[in-house]
Image (tube, rainbow, N blue to C red; front, top):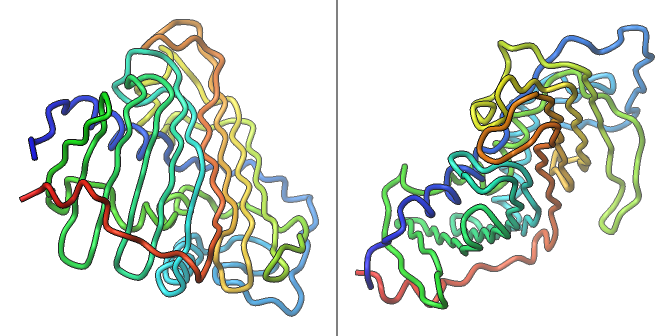
Amino acid sequence: MAQLSRRRALSALATGFATVLAGCSDDSAEESETDRPLEGVDIPGIENGRLESVLELADAHHDAVVSQSATRRGTITGSPLGADDGSATAFTEARTDGDVFFHRVTSDGGTDGLVREEYLDDSSHYVAIREDGEWSGERVGRRGGTSRTYLTGNTHLHWLDGAARFVGTELRPGGTHYLFTHWTESMPDASRPPHADSSPDDGEATYARNRFLVDEDGLCREFEQIEHYEGDDDQNGVDAPYNHVVEWSLSDVGSTTVEEPQWVDGID
């Protein structure tokens, strides 16, 4: 099968959407607020109703996904890094079953609506794009595709900060889940993420909101992060104000299976 021909399109989907958001931190949490305790519940990384260890929660989530299998579906909305067609929405799907992963990203703009897929097993990593109904793919090295930690959602959880607070419970199929939120009204320049370079000139994140829903094992069932930017100028075809949004939900926990895509057969 022919090697990938549209490197820039592949890069925009692989790198731009995979890194469209990064962590935002702020010390603006109001200390006067009363923490809501989590009684009788021991969620990794959570102490006294607050997210005290992002690393512990993220690792617990990653381990739970890999050990049980799961499907993560969501959207990423914003200006893809390096794109010049303005804002776009990427529809994402990541299926995980042990050491086998499948990842699909479909864009509705910014990269001509291309479809990008990845398949990882315990020994190989493959990437392909579909254009005009035709697939072209290749085997890539460890740094040539999306990381396994990103596919499970571990990377997204690392974007959270320790100011997130427990706000309530939701009864869902499979048991009780615990909702945490964090809102900050400003983000200092020192913490501006890499994607800020693709925001409007002089853009400034005026507020950010995190929301995540976890179970007692630390498995994140829903994730949402919104950053709102203000700015006076135009860059990459995006007029401020605008939002960068990442949101996804986990489903088919324990019942997800991953099959090798047909296009892998044509790769040497």
